Image (tube, rainbow, N blue to C red):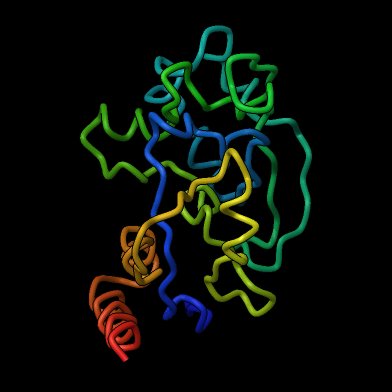
Length: 192
C-alpha cells in the first residue's frame, strides 16, 4: 500500500481513548471484503461466545447486502448488520460491538492468543484513516474530524506528526521499516 503525502504532515490532534469515545466509530457497521466475511464465519466458534446477547448465531452477523469496492481484494464487499443500540452514540451500532464498547472480533482474537486485529476488517483497522481516489492511505481534513462529537480524534496542545498518531495502523499496513522512514521524515518536516 502507499500513503497520501498528507500523512507526512503534523497537526494538533491525538487519538481518543475507548473510554472517551465508547467506539462511536461503530455507529453504522462496516463494509468488509467477502474474503474477510468468509474468514469471520470460519472462526465463528471463537467469536460467537463473545457476541452481544441475541447475536451468537453467525447467520445474524451480516445484512446480506453485497456491493463492489475497487480497493477490496475480491472487489466485492458485504455489510455487517447494524442493530438498534440506545446506549451507543447515535442509537445504532455494528453487531460486533459489545456492551463494553469492545469489538467481539478483536476480543475473540485476544482471548485466543492471536494478534488483536486477526479478525478485524480492513476498514475497521484503517479508521479514521481512509483511502483516497488512488487507493492511498490518507486522512480527511482535520476540521471535519475534530468537529464531530463521535470522532476518533481529539484536539492536542502541540503539533504531532500524523505518522506518529497513526503509527499502529501504518505499521500494520506498511511494515515497521516503512513506517519508521515515514515517521522520521514527518518529524524532520515538523522541525523545519
